[in-house]
Length: 458
Image (cartoon, rainbow, N blue to C red):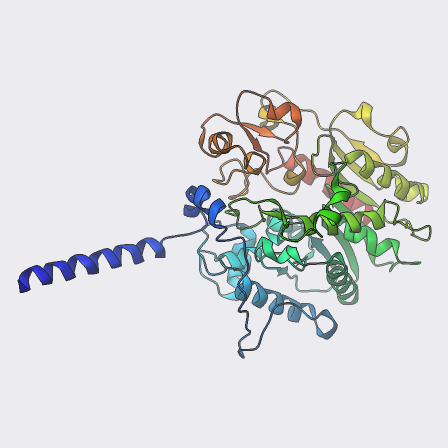
């Protein structure tokens, strides 16, 4: 009898240890196979509610009015991510060159934690000559600039990134975030960077671009330290004509979510609340919509813009109209410095645009990476094909456009044969499942053009 009990205890201990080992091995890559249960459970959809700092005091957000330096902001923002992100301490073997630099600086391990990949960061030079501030898009995190940060750092820039309030944690954080919170964060980061450096460039992806435009348009005069703007898929007007309804739907009790997804992408939210759509609509309305008052200011700051004709998040036609207006407010010598990289049909460009800036429409040869791509997606412009998460060999696949079609969603996630591109109506009707493109097949050509822009604006 005793022998049987001992055997039972040994078996029980083995099972417990096996379960513990399996749990210990869970990381940001292994959870990708659990997307069905994660969609249903929403395990990573909601932020931790008990968020305390090192002193045991609540720390749910950053008080920008009390920050003494950018480093103080970085420290505080990282602590918020650690406290509120339900996966903050989960290992994530996605190692970028930017992470390697940060790991040396902060004495982190070789294998990142999710908190370390999504938090805002700074790659500092040993001088205060020039800096670039990079602001991510809606539902994104500073990870979207891990690739481009290396380019700018190698060009001699101190690279700063900003984590917009409500991001880097869990999608539920966007249920109550206001665009004024984003404006406050952007204003702090821009002003602090202008205070700290002699030359400053500002760069924004999607909503980040709208925040930069909004900041500048509110100023009668801007600091001469600002030498140029980089805009990747800048937000101007939502592609959907029904985007304006989000603010009203969000007001209906218990109707909170446009999409409920698995949220397995550690660097970008997959579930999407109505409030997020309402807030970005309100922000864009200040830049190009009816809410943009007559006193908004265009400034003669050179632009570098990357946009796709087939963008299914933002209406590129509105973006190009805004760019043209900005350019027409500049003297000719400034116009000539500006550049547009356009992934689309150059016959669909505004007629005056080619007269007020240099326009590059990349051509795709049969042997190039782009030859297997159907259109450049809104979310793809900043990522290198070599990105270990979003690149050609990355394990992650963006399939949220099929979240209500289980067989197609599964095929998108697992089929060896898929097509890549933007989620246009045409692409979604193709025979093979459509994986939304998460890297820029023209990345190297873009870097070459960016080098020319920096030379012309320095």
